[in-house]
Image (cartoon, rainbow, N blue to C red; front, side, top):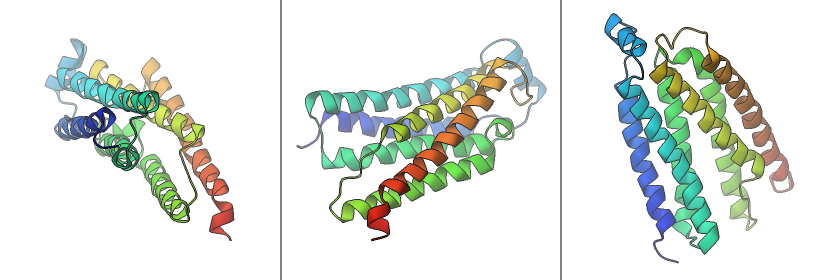
Length: 205
């Protein structure tokens, strides 16, 4: 099949990811009085815009997947581009969050390293196994991991947009972020181990 609607949505998601990264690159990195005052008055415009872009981009992943399954609009391009763009969106967002001193307390660098390492591992495994002519699709645990990653990023962006002093621990969002981070870490490691287990017969043949 040629170019499909899910492929168009995937490309648009990449555009949204780039726009998100531009916004995050110019987010404040120091809690000066002007920035703190904006938080005390309500949602920060730049923070809310970043959150909105991320939510739309993440939701588009579910949409193009549903369309592809519902109408059989699958293609070789979509099979490669869809997971690639997903990784760019999630890993890129986490890198920008952990590099900003105002958000880094909730997204530690070691967590991002573990997550990106897992993605490299699974991508390498998938390429190797499928080169042997064996299908190696994503499983439910991997998909749930993706959902939790999106929840974690959304919570951090919401806190950054809505809290007067988001870099200081406290409030319901601080606890929600901590729970999401540890659940995401558990699923990230667990799904990586599961992929290795699934590929064991080919890896150690």
